Image 1 (cartoon, rainbow, N blue to C red):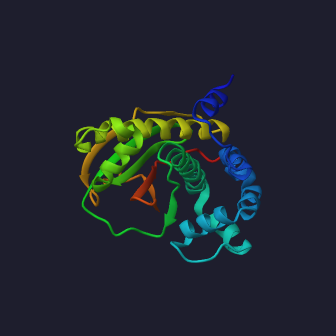
Image 2 (tube, helix red, strand yellow; image 1 turned 135 degrees about the vertical axis):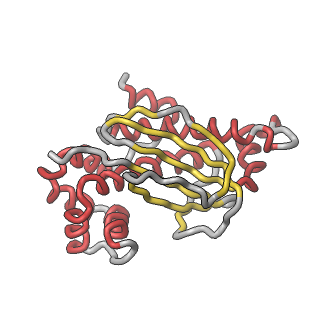
Length: 234
């Protein structure tokens, strides 16, 4: 059984959308396939909107002309970011749905500041970067109780970093499976977890960043995808 099949079986994953899989494989030869890449993006409303929003900083609605222009403007690095974003969002949502029984609902932004539990996973290979997930400390009790049930301690803060780390292990398993399916050869680091200020996120000079926000019935969280220059254009 392949690595991808092993992970699908282990985590009971739903398959990725076919458009995302095709896009992930084609983007490795961006210059040869830019017209087909635009065609695939246009066939998916969510992909179209995301590509145009990245290219125009939130302006535009995903028309054919906007998408074709955005693909040419963004180039391989940021189209690769779109692919990676789809892969990690799918992985995160699957984890919250199956393990916390709470699907993620996208939001334009969140206003909650203060201390957060930050989880981070590095990835390296044909794509290089890191994923950072910010969860409010105030949601610690709910997260721990969802994972441990009656075995949860009286003070959830005693083990919240361990629990979030285990959650990220599951996210990482989902993410790795998605990478395999999309033809993106990457290795993932062991997740790291720390508690610190929401606003203090250090970004490298060469990193490209996309931030997404989600809400469940019990918490609001942020997802940052930070990517270094990824693949040489062939």
